[in-house]
Length: 599
Image 1: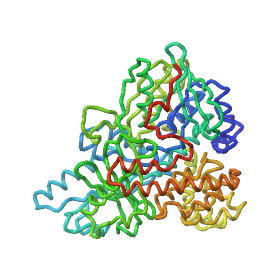
Image 2: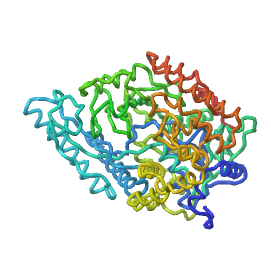
Image 3: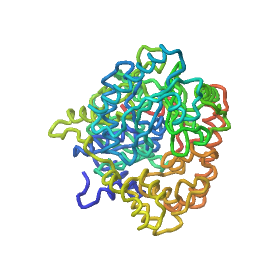
Image 4: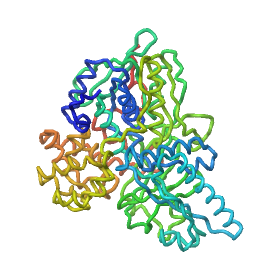
């Protein structure tokens, strides 16, 4: 529980001093719930448990959202295709969560984005059928949102003629469409939402430590009573034990590692997770002329073209992946597939020269009998393969809060005693309180702090009402008000703030997740890394040797990713990507022996 004499902001400040204190807590205290995994589900579970008054710890081997949760399509959506598949419960659940996030929980991070459903060119009877079929689906989507969406926060859909569609999206080929339907979904910076969840958990009293790798379970008789942890920021130190009444593993595509450890002692895990690789391209806004996104049906997946600030995000693929899970690689074949698909509807075809950034992520799908990952379940499951250990896997980003509540409900029943029910549907994340008023008064805020309205808008859309803390840093040190070299849409203050308040420990954390410079610039952050190292080094007390090492690691990563994206297939792309070592010193995680159980 948070000390009531400490403000919520101060309690949620993930500073270097806080990390040291939380490491001490891990060694010295016993927790009600220990969460393994700093993705959206794990961070959400930590918030849920801490908000119920439980004593909570969260450990993450790398950084917040370092895996799947920073590599999505950046959408908070109800799943329009689930409606087509008549999975109405999934649509209901997701639209409810979308409404909560957009209006109450994180309005500073989730906002409406218009999306077009192009209607293919065809004869009159087929055009009428298509408009009726898709129109009914989108109308049902709006009805579901209105009934179940907890204050929908999204405008209603609208039918468009061919001319109306091309007015909104001039780059659409006129010969390929007969019209379109415009609807709205939510857009989010996925990594920032996860960081915000981690800080919110900390503000509620949770011990939150990244760069802390679980190396095994602690067991007494037939019950898990904790884990062994190694601090990856102190490579010479010994691993230590963390005691907990319940361990929650929210490890996504790494869930089978836990399952493998359990099989080694004759315990059946009860679920199996397959990894599906999704690749996205980022191109400049100037490459495509349009004021809305697109959703297109392909032979194997759904393709989104989504406006993203001064860029477009194009994705995704949906293919099996059995290679390195920490750094999934996009191959030249993946890139060509996405370009071929999107170019079928664009009047000016995109080429590889248009690409600014590429990123690949792995979706954790509950494995079934289907041959393709696109047919596997997007639902989630919670299992207890051994007393004291809960595994949660599957699901989708939008419904993280439901997954978190489900697994903590199981933990609460196991703990016994009076435990409050989940209340995270009523709990605004840090920066959400007072956001509407702050946005309304943004011009006044800009005048008071001597900055442009554009700067305040940029900060409000990333930090919400925490913006005042960045403005105070800039007033105290005018150098932090300068744009970051090579990425003028970001400020130096954001790098310092990431290190001092958001738990960032390495340049990769800042350039890849606290900002999105690694995918939003053609140089992939290479022209920003020196300036970022100067600012971050000053905040964290790095000497010249550490700064140079951080720069070297980041540039090696950029080189390896670029090389992997020229390789013809998954195997060669994976080999090229593994040419750059992880800054945290992690070996490739494809081998189960990296997680040894102490049983």
